[in-house]
Picture 1 (tube, each protein chain N blue to C red):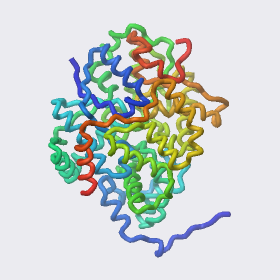
Picture 2 (tube, helix red, strand yellow):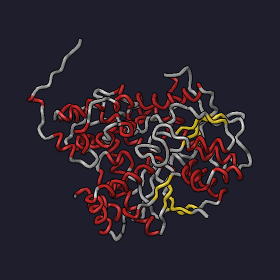
Picture 3 (cartoon, helix red, strand yellow):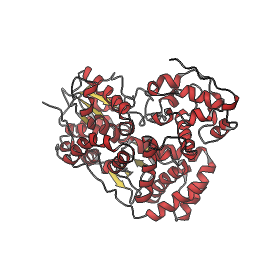
Picture 4 (tube, helix red, strand yellow):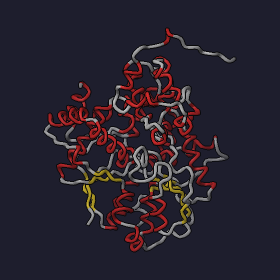
Length: 288
Length: 189
């Protein structure tokens, strides 16, 4: 049986609640076990990195130390920013021994042990589902194939960059393959699939940020998508929540559904919409 | 009116390129061949005063004031497209982070510049509780930069409340003292 340490991250406990709800429901249905890291802390994320890189690495290392204490070699992080933050910190500690030394001794002060050389595997749920669990198995568990769902898979930036061990930097296909297996009509050449959603610019410089999010929706709609699926809480939040401000670029508020990939996948597994957090979406796909 | 800006020796801050390229991840800065792939692939370069390629060139010339005073470094959303495509394997995104940190250290940015304010709010919130509430950060950001703009954000707050996703209070971790010790130890070092 597949079993992993689980690092939720702050977003899925707040604005991205429906991501965690649907993720846990899907994993439960497939019998994949996640054990939440007790008392985990913020990953440091992008904003923290801009202030103090060493402190950000220290924040990540505390979480990784607890994963090691739990006895796991793999940890699952559903948020793309956390996923990258954990990976980047571990890589920097492997690349720069003096950074590792400083972080290790700061952790030792509070009785924590962390060894970057153990090279914990930091995984996104997509990797668990497609690479570890397997598409054939998923096909076998599919009770309600997503026939007629025309889907634009949006990956965002930090899931596949700068690292390319999960998939291609600019043209990943892992989510496309998953949804083809689930019977969906996947727009496999959705050309903006890794173009930035605007990230925190929607809040700081909305003139730029909201426009970046709008492009993604306009392109998906142009390609006839019923909805976009995402694998990152910030992408989902940006594309969905700012639609009432997109009228300035569009003829109207697009009111376009933006789902977490786990929500759409849950439908294919025959799970209940409530359990998948559909009640938390502002716009739901009609007639599907 | 077209205004031509000419930089001369008096604008140079000797040692700036050394200071930046000594930072972890920024070592390869001098390998830049000025091909412009970074600027071409950057989704926000059209909004920038200096594009990433120009920032690297300016750094090479020790033009610290231009680099750290630019708004471009705060527009970088860390999408890593430039880093992934750079033929010289320069970690441009990490260099942008280095610029941000130096700009804050030397107080270059305008006081109410939202991205810098957000970075500080985020830092303070994470150190306070160990976890953050994205909503609380967004609200304090708006209050500290442009309260009037905040009125336009009310709709988003209402939508989040309707869907049960509005949380002002971040959960405080049990090991908060332990986390602060780690953060403060590394900050001093």
